[in-house]
Amino acid sequence: MSDKSGLVPIEIVFDDAPVTSRAGLLPYFDLWKRLSMPQVVDRQVSICGEQGWRDRQMVLALVMLNLAGGDCISDIDTLEGDEGLCEMVRGFERSTWSAKECKAVERRFRSGRTRAFPAATQISSFLEACHDAHQEELRKPGKAFIPAPNESLRSLMALNTILVHRLQAADPQ
Image 1 (cartoon, rainbow, N blue to C red):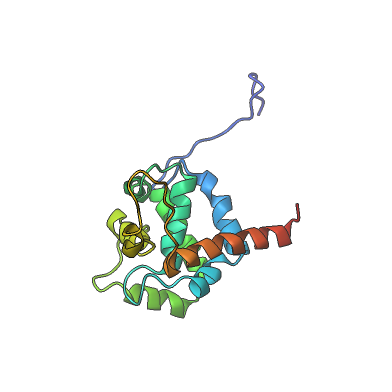
Image 2 (tube, helix red, strand yellow):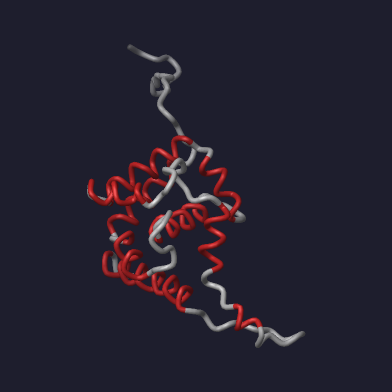
């Protein structure tokens, strides 16, 4: 069949499958997995504990929020409202865990898991663990102050170093 406009003929089919305008995030999921960052986060970070979201899910949510242009942690609700993106996140998680691990993750949620991304309040608590209140006592009025990082923040800082090393090993620049 010839199209006189010279354009490639494209047929758009509407069905019930979720779609997303954030499909550009998919290569980052692939990169995150290829660099084994979920496993690195599991070894490096221990903020979340035994209930609810795992550290790897929190870190990935923050990375995706940043890549999607989020201005604040409450913007995670915008990502949660994107059904297609949520389906990508769930599929990504399933691809990084064994069937046994998937069941163990679901058991971490007492009343069941309904979200693909942690809620803003949960992300806030995760980030709050990186804050050391005792460092604030050292702050002096009118003086610039950079607080010393606590163990939780150092573990997140180490992730950045590991990520850069893995990227360099894959494609030296």
